[in-house]
Image (cartoon, one colour):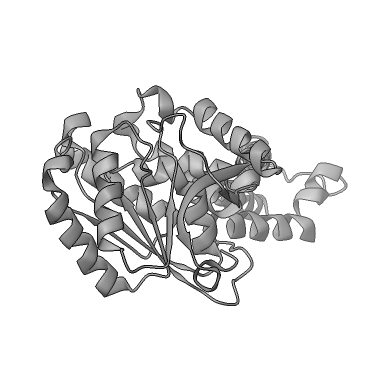
Amino acid sequence: MVLLEVIGHAAAALAFIVVIVLTVRRRRRLARTLSRNATIAYRSILGVSGVVALIHASYALESLVFNRTVSSPDPLYMALHSPALVALSVVLLFLVSVKLVAERSPRPRRILAIGAHPDDLEIACGATLAKMRDAGHSIYAMILTCGEAGGDPAIRLREAHHGARFLDVNEVEVLNFSDTELADQVNEITRAIEARIRTYQPDIILTHSAHDQHQDHLAVHQATLRAARNHSAILCYESPSVTRDFQPTFFVDIDGYLDVKIESVRTHADQRRKPYVSPERVRGIAVFRGGQAKTRYAEGFEVVRALASAVGDI
């Protein structure tokens, strides 16, 4: 009897330790799944699992050392063996492993998001992309360079794919144009964007703004407008290098997705020393644009063209 109790408590303790390990390893996925409640859920899962594992381990040790079973009237012992504990275990594993999605859109659309560098999309419109993806829209990301002028290109390439997987975009393609020299390659970039437009047939195109001080961003904007000259829905997102002339008139409510955006920016660890990738800066811009849009948090876009039937309720 004592041996069976030791085995039972040890197995229970081990089970909750496994939950802790899975939670730690899947923290980023948990953040993507639960958005604003991710931090609370993460700490709650670790706290509850840790306490229960410790209690079970202590009971196993007590039974083993003193060669006796724990008294069944013990309230804590009874609680640990109640159906509520089983339900708690199921809930914890569900939160760790299952992806929850937003309300699905009645008319899914295809979005082509174009950026100059590996972290541009996450910083500028990561929350919008995540929200649209959860609503059932298809997201295709096109990055023009590996960002070699701003870091290790191999690392940045890998982080571009990590960020895309975190946001759950359908497909990401990183091209090999020369970082900081896109202004000299506008014609080639235009042809590359034209090819992707033919392939993906997007309803909406997201790109850099014309009001951007970074030469690469401006070059991508110009190339996009040339390539999409016959396209009916083009929105320009906000990069850290936009000028005061950037005036968004189209806003996406990102309440519930700000933490997702912050976590997506963190996937670009190679850029973590840049001040504009700090959570405080990302949150501040979302609050500012939210104030303009009369909501809590928002991402703002300049409208080049926006045909209502193409944009709809994204």
